[in-house]
Each structure stands twice: as C-alpha cells, then as structure tokens.
Image (cartoon, rainbow, N blue to C red):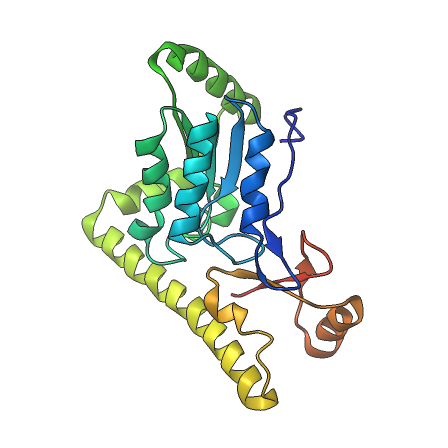
Length: 246
C-alpha cells in the first residue's frame, strides 16, 4: 500500500499479551472510512498471529463493510492449511457472492511448495460499467511488475490441477502438512502443561497455520537462538515474537 502511494490506515487486530483478537476495536475502524474505500484483510492462517476470525466475527465484519459501502479485499496465502483447501476458499466465495465489487488475491507458493516461483492469481469483481477501466489498470500494473512473467510456477500448478491423479495426490499431501502443523501445536501445548504445569501457550492449540506470536523478550529471543538453535523473527506487534512452524 505504501509503495503504491495509497493513503491507508492500519487497524488493531490482535493483542499479543492476551493472545486474542481485538475484534471490537477492529470493527470500529471501518466506520471512519468512506463509501468506495477498500478494506484489506488476510484470509485463513493469519500471518503472523495465527489467530483467525470466527465465522460469526467474519459475518459481522462483512455486515459492517456492506452497510458502509466499503469494498472488501482479501489476501489468501495459505489455502489448505486451516481446514482443507475447499473449506479455506469459503471466505472468498462469501465475499464474491455478497459484494458487487471486491478483490481476491491468492498466492499458491506455500500450498504447492513453489515459494520461489510466486504463482498466484488476482480476481477483481466490479460493476459492468467499470470493467474496461479496471482491466486497463490491472494490466498496466502487472506489466510494470514483469513485462513477461516467468511461467514455470504457474505451469506447475496448471499441470497438477488439470490432472485428476496429480490433483488428488497434491490434496492428500497438503492435508498431511496441515495435520502435521496442527499436531505440532498440540504437542507444544501438551509439553508445557506436562513439564511445567502451566497454560501460557494454550492459545497455540486454538490457532491455525504456520505462524503465531510468542510473548518473548529480547533476552529470551537471543537465548533461544544462541543456546538452542531456534530462530524467531521480529513480529509486527511488539513485544511479541513470531514463531514459524515447519
């Protein structure tokens, strides 16, 4: 948003100290927007918090956006890592069915294991009168980024999805990775409870995806890296640190 020179304002989403969404505060944010403004949100497996909205919260958000005439823009980068691939697409389907204008971005780098190739798609739903101008704008943006984009990543995805056996195998392997990440979360929670009798990390078991925020200080972060070889990255919501589960 900043690189595009667009005016934007960040909204509160997550409290790292309580390890829970600040949903009511986030829901108040769009009230300052004007009709036609865009609301950018992440889809399933929120990065870096790991905390997704519940179905009721997501419905409440869409109700607010619709009432205010705001265009929803959803970024989906971890399809298949929350429930399953089809279920994880529900958010995009609900938005597309409900709003006359919306934007859906999909990145397939993680779910297909082709992170370096940046395969994905951009879907823009708009009113009929605006289709030509939107097409010109999107085309100009795409061409400025890569005059002739590499086809290797998209070709891999295309080959898999157009072959019944390959697609079935990919979906099974994707589900295996999703279950593995879920098991890791469960194991971390169980180890803390069994070894220390505490429940500070119980929130990890309620979250999904590869990321979560841990309430770590700088000294603890350094100790993890230097003494145990566990590397954490700076989170967007200090003082928490982001944990990546691989």
